[in-house]
Every structure is written in structure tokens, then in C-alpha cells.
Length: 178
Image 1 (cartoon, rainbow, N blue to C red):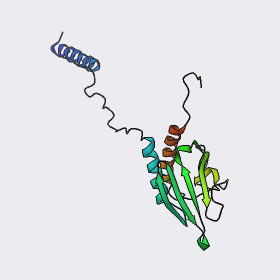
Image 2 (cartoon, helix red, strand yellow):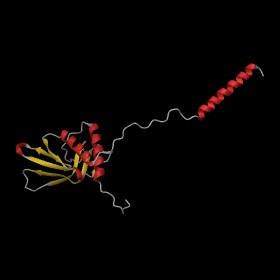
Image 3 (tube, rainbow, N blue to C red):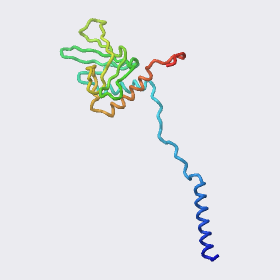
Image 4 (cartoon, rainbow, N blue to C red):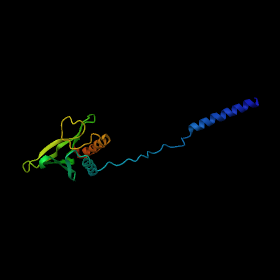
């Protein structure tokens, strides 16, 4: 064989073996671990406190926050002539909300809201089971807050209420299949 042909064969074998060795080696960089910090689910109390703070910041006209304690948010709606109604919202009784495809964002729960007005008989309380948070309010539920223009906050409220509803949902007994 000629000298050039031998050199070409040696080069070809060298390149082929380098290529095979490169395929056998593990990649130099291992996949990066997910550095995104995953925050723990907030406690029920933290969830209720956050919702109460957002409610207090976004009260509708003629409404004043009176108190918040142990998951019960109380506000007063003032009327002309000195009349008022106090509404108590019990976060511990919230058991559901609208479906994700509805434009109307509302929450509900049995006797979730209690209302007493100063011109009614002492001890008289009216109970409501639905409360509008944002949206067109098709069913004309009570709507004491103004969130409609803050869509990002509304989405965060939906997540908070979803978490709260999980905490409030009835737990399955050990013998139950469903």
C-alpha cells in the first residue's frame, strides 16, 4: 500500500473510534435539579387571614370592617338616617364556589352569612348561603366587595378559596368507599 492510503485508513479509523467513544460516554452535564422553590400549602388560619385582609382592603361603598377573629369577618353597611346592617361571614362554613368556567365568582356555604340590622327586632338574624366576590353577579347575591377591576387578585382569591374549601370539606370516614 502506498503511504497516503495507509495514512487515510489510519485517520478514518481514528475518527470512527472517536465518534464511537463519544457516543458511549455519559453527558458531561447532569440535568439541573429543579431550583424553583415550592412553598408549602398555607395553613387554614393563614388562608382565612389573607382573605380577610383582601376583603378589608376592597370593601364597597358605605361599608366598614368592624372585626375579624377566628375566621369570622364582620362588616357594617351604613344607610341614610343612621340605619345600618352588620353582616358576619364565617369562613369556617364556606364549602364551595362557582365552577371554573363561570364568569361569575361566588362562594357558598350553609348559613355562611348572618345579617342583623339595627331597625329589626332584637335577636332577629337573616342567613344567606351565597356571596358574590366578583363578576356579573347573575343571581343578584350580596356583593360587598369591589374586586372586578383586579383580575390578578381575583385569580389569587380563587386559589385561596379553593384551599379553604379543601380544609372545610367533610373528611371521609375510614369505612367509606367514596
